[in-house]
Image (cartoon, rainbow, N blue to C red; front, side):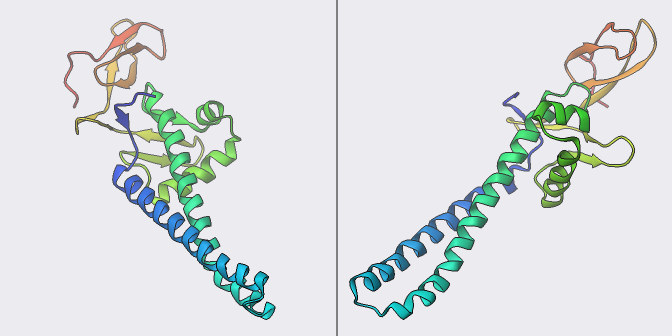
Amino acid sequence: MDQTRTYLNQNLITKNKKKSSLQFKIGIGMLIFYSFDFIAIYEGSLDKYYIPLVIALMMPAFYLIWCSRKNSAEISEATKYDEVFCKDKNGIVTAHEMAEALDKKYFDIFVELERLFRCGYFVNCTLQQGRNPSVIMYAAQMNDGKSVGFMQVVCKKCGASTRIRANSRGKCEYCGSIISTVNRKNP
């Protein structure tokens, strides 16, 4: 993955990482706290009839830990998709390209992507559904705060128009000639 480019919503990623960490710490703390009740029941300090109550009190702790793991998994999924987006040369990643790159089923890709887009994990790209499902990228965010988008370049050999990343070189989709956006202004 090009480490300088990203389509991730960094503010949301940072917020969810902090939230996940806090949920996990609180959940573990609650489990440790209520485990002392089990020790007291085992030693005979508390009556064994308190077991259902202690288990009921532990449920929110399990829920917090589950939420923490779910948030972490979403961030991990979004990062994997971002890697595929950043490697793309023409700004359009089809469902088949993603399925092949991530070794997942075609249908599963768009179920996951729909959820991640709905949660707001991606910026400067859109999920296009319909006959040719794909993700269309506009401008990737760079570490220096600037963005790098895509340009339409007309092939000098065949006259066809091809979309490639700004300040890069590529091949014409139609005739295979080398085309370049280096030293051109991004519209």
